[in-house]
Amino acid sequence: EVQLVESGGGLVQPGGSLRLSCAASGFTFSDHYMDWVRQAPGKGLEWVGRTRNKANSYTTEYAASVKGRFTISRDDSENSLYLQMNSLKTEDTAVYYCARSPGSGWFDYWGQGTLVTVSS
Amino acid sequence: SYELTQPLSVSVALGQTARITCGGNNIGSKNVHWYQQKPGQAPVLVIYRDSNRPSGIPERFSGSNSGNTATLTISRAQAGDEADYYCQVWDGSTPYVFGTGTKVTVL
Image (cartoon, rainbow over all chains, first blue to last red; front, side, top):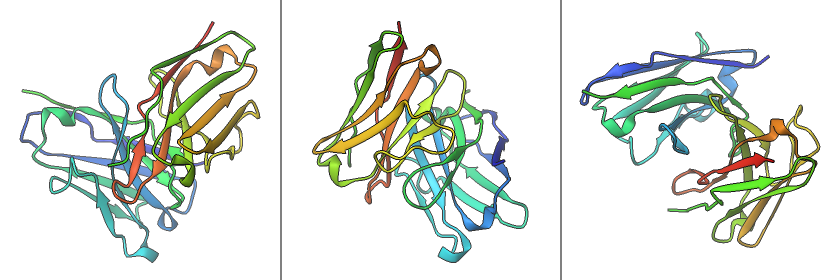
């Protein structure tokens, strides 16, 4: 059974940093692209960024709203995905989901999400 | 950037058919995917590549895509189908774009 479990969310002040983790199990993690998607309270879904697999050189892409502030990485030996968030803004407040992508444009499995609150 | 527009809400009587639209410029040329999200839960993929159902998704869920509109159809609606539904496409410039979301209410 595919499982994705996020952790690391919490309350952080504007300008601060936070690192989210996503532990994957039930599938060959190293074969897959992995993404982060967020959802502000009461709002819709927003793609944050992705990391491709080893076969595609672990290249990353980011949404314009987070580019230069957020960094996605992965550790295939630990079946883990990470999201380093720096220079956080109040508008980054959201539930952050990790999601598996077959690499063909959709997300077939999602984690349960972790809440990040940016507030003074 | 590419935009996807959905109705804010759709109501359907129990056992009847609900149709949720997703509008976008020439969306028929793209692959459209649909997610169901119940309150407090993560999204679940219900349709991929316009009309394909993942394993475990009831046949009551179907999709179509043509011209400027993609449609998710829920047949024989059940109380458990109450949720928010989002369409999504891959667009090279963004690259992932989600629709604005539709709240489905089963009466």
